[in-house]
Image (cartoon, rainbow, N blue to C red):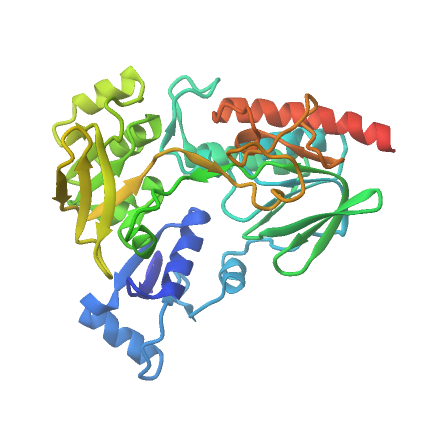
Length: 393
């Protein structure tokens, strides 16, 4: 019996990728074993599955085993609530980051029945950040995971109901109400819905990237950094996120290099100074990543020197991409006004062009993409929703 979750799989298996992505989204640690490079692991999988190489085969600390589990089965195993207790709420919040949870606890304190639906782990991007150094009230900083846990507990203390590992697929007007439909077919009604789905790290969209995502190309150092203990990794992006995540990766990797497209990095001076002090970190500017080579594993990163045009091939064990954010607005992009970048446009009350649907945090056009300001927008949205509910009765 193991004291941690062990995932037996391969790098090419799509179900393995899905299971590992699920654990990462829920911030559940696990050990990954590639059976193609471990004869004992291969034998264990075959023995467990009566001679079949069925993957992923996942072993849990209690000794139980799931083979090729669905997302719903994984959620059930982790005791995550995926169905709400009632069919109608005063307010439904879609997204459980700082904006959504702050709004929810404000609303619940007012005595309003509030449901939060989050497809991943509570805390959003803040929850997978190594350390929040600039959130007011934490003079020595706070780990992102701890911050997320505290925020979730605080919301529940005021009676907020939270669903996790549940995806919203539709928001539709239904008379004076809005109907929210989740992927499992459940429908929940409300007079007000707050969209706080945040933003995701943008992809490079270069050849080879899509095929290697989840294998050797990643977007979360906290989730996947531990797989590169003693290895060499490349961080793409010279902003604050790239530098912060790069510094975190030095806890595991023997060498961490940062490459920036522009001629100068945009990271803060404090972060630049921290990186400069690291003997196992380098920064290269004015280079464009053009391609990832490799089939089942990363073999080379093709970059171009933008000053000379020279193409180079760099060898790394893994790559982490931090080149900006794209809004998670696909759910409503055909129903409400969005700007040219896909961010949701709101009025001064944070309501969108669809009556009763509000937006706050990183998904909203004009937001500053900071955890502290997201929490502030959540509080503002809660107050605006309270006034809106008074008006509509």
